[in-house]
Amino acid sequence: MTVSDDRLASLTIDGFLDVLASDAPTPGGGAVAAIAGATSAALIVMVGRLTVNKDGFEDVRDRMQAIIETAAAAQAELVELADRDAHAFDAVMDAFKMPKGTDEEKAARSAAIQAGYLGAAAVPLDVARRCVDLMALAVEATAKGNPQAASDALSAAASLHAGALCAIANVEINATSLKDPSARASMLEELASLKDRAARSLGECQDAFGQRLTA
Image 1 (cartoon, helix red, strand yellow):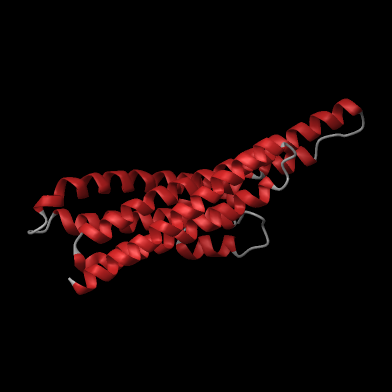
Image 2: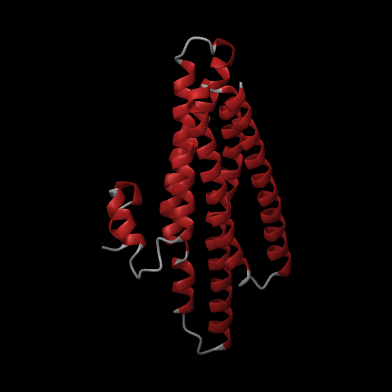
């Protein structure tokens, strides 16, 4: 089976792992990053639901409900991004197959290759952004949610951190092929900011978890 046969979300866990472990170039690290983000979002939703329906959490009920809705939407978006990432490199491979017999053909081929690399970087960049944004919700879920589920919220943050780093690596490898120095520099600058935010959020979540243990 190839990745084009089904949406990744329609596969069983075993089926996804089989196609991931095959010698096909996709799905790969970018799709794994998106799935990590989606499963983490689901964990945040779970923590929220274990909080809003419990007595004693009335003061955070509205905020937890908002977190549930935001994380649930992100979960669906990240699953879609996993599928998009599995095909994001197709344009690059197609561009390399373009004719290059004349100067005009070479120029068109080169432009298509560059556009393909930009597109291939755009999807994991979106995944990285969403994972890092979700980490802030994981911090809140850890600090304010049902303490019995604090480990699940920290698990979400840790998985989101891993997903962000995976996605960032996939952006970086495509960025190295960009010939436009300004586009490459802008992308790498954003990646550095995302790495810093992710590291800070993970530390905040670990601190919040430690406080829940001693509360």
